[in-house]
Length: 358
Image (cartoon, rainbow, N blue to C red):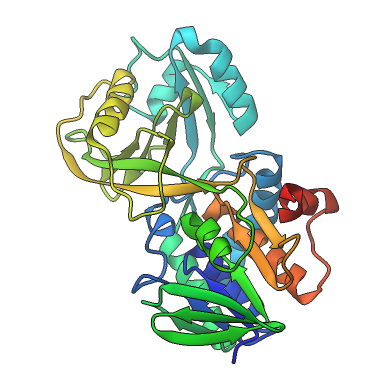
């Protein structure tokens, strides 16, 4: 018998388990044989405080202290640069303002990112306080905290049925039966599927594929101190990765929930956009992969009790913001379940609530 069943073992579900386990008996069910396999295992792994809409930025701000300090912190300074062609000035200035970047000269930009192509880059902006986020460490920290408080983690347990028996939920997963007063739907790309299974109206969460390529670093250059570099209007991004570079086309192609893989043509087009802005061509691809970023219709996270179904709580629609918002998002979910007073302001809580879709 469990008080709370969390469905989904990505960063949302694992962080929620850590926040809820001190207050209730928690069982987390994950389809895969390991935690953080899908979107959480394929993250760009950055913390950029001003990345996202107003509600996301509020969650980022509320998560910053945890990321910097809890369990020794999970952040290391990387810096962020935005680049654009000369004819993209309007979009460049809009992006730089939204992301809190300051315009810099092309000479300053080249000093930070030596492969910048001065013949094609016409604008550059930068902020030093963007950080690599150790996603694996964050998952481990939350899982350790959850287990220490008594939470149970069951992997290889695909949910096949959800029914209501009086005031309690009955969940069949991995051939076993579980029951609880509360379900937390942290199923990522499968969040609407889980809702339908429980007889709850779906919200309209759509998974979008985003691909990544790991490429060899330009010969003879040390990439370790290079910034995260974003193309204007999120047309591509690149960041150092263990002596190589990760480049993403930054595409958003709608997809059904599945174990995503990269599209070769999309990768080629994205790498071409990246190559336009650099002096060193892509010589070889070391690996590629893709993940699904799942958004609600208004591109804002969905956190809180379902408007029509008692005992069914949402923690979904993280899009590309799951790791950077996890501390505040999971704490809000736990506060709303346990009746504690949330630290977030009322307007943000309302903006995140599933009731907005009722």
